[in-house]
Length: 76
Image 1 (cartoon, rainbow, N blue to C red):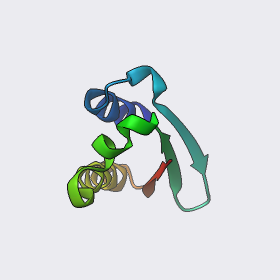
Image 2 (image 1 turned 120 degrees about the horizontal axis):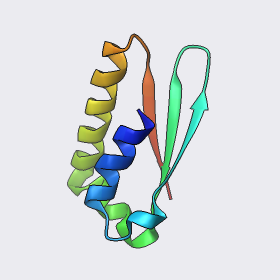
Image 3 (image 1 turned 60 degrees about the horizontal axis):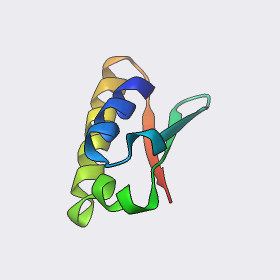
Image 4 (image 1 turned 45 degrees about the vertical axis):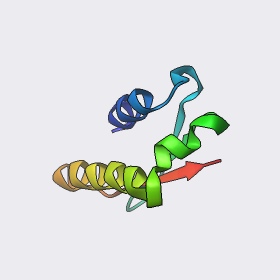
């Protein structure tokens, strides 16, 4: 899952080397914390949050197929 998020986000940003994803595993679900360069944060979120919503939808679909729950947090 972490590789999938990294692949999608690196395709969006201008500085792919600044993409950092940390994984916080819990009992029932996993939280993925995404950090990007300040100038790329708008590209990841998108207009009215549509890009971030689309990424979250894909993550939700993949995690449900695996029988797990996952959540994406975008950290500034």
